[in-house]
Length: 104
Image (cartoon, rainbow, N blue to C red; front, side, top):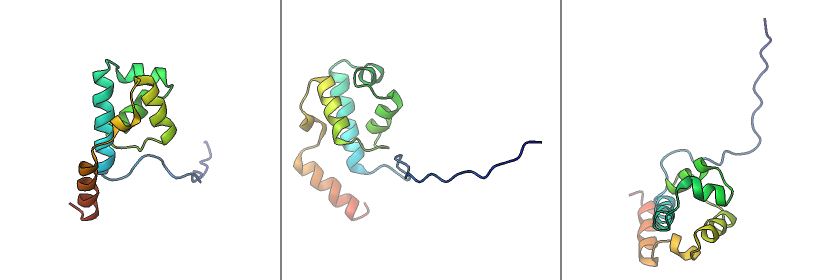
């Protein structure tokens, strides 16, 4: 009979978000998806060109994972666009932040 060993606890915090995605991450992810699709890239093609796992791209686009600045730069370079295209207008950002702050 095999001996069970206690599971080691990870010392590193999980990078996957728990709970519902934030409105801001969803908005940025949606913009990344729109730019990617407009440029004719599939998630696979984008992931291969960066390189990054396709599932990671999907989680960013669905607001379940926050993209780091280096990842945003890589995505922008692969899609040949400005990083600013991934962000909503300042008015939309203000509404998103206000809604999250107020729990709406």
